[in-house]
Image (tube, rainbow, N blue to C red; front, top):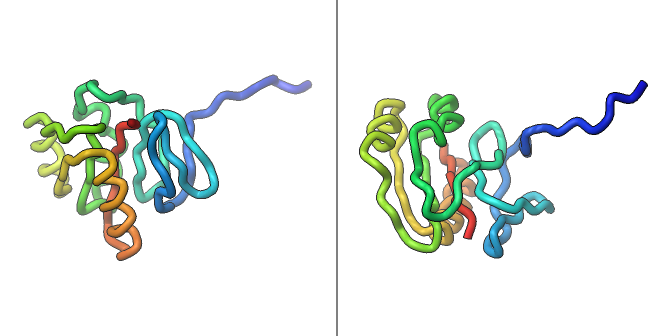
Length: 128
């Protein structure tokens, strides 16, 4: 007997450049996603953070879980640059991850360049 619809956490299992952003989402790997995303070595995940929300250690838990494969975390903080809270910077530094907050557009462009260079980069992008 069929068990019905199964809802799973949004996840793309791979690394891909970002083709476009805006209108509240992102395009990558011939797909689109509405909302914010984390792009990690293990893949792309939905990120439950909106513009204006604080970036917290807990919201970056997946990043910290993959710290051994990440040297740099770019954080697209929305339309404007917002500094990361001290506890977030401390947690990332403790995991040997350099962090760089910037506008989402700048983070998208920088991520694509670093990904093309095969760098150990991850990005947390707040949708604009």
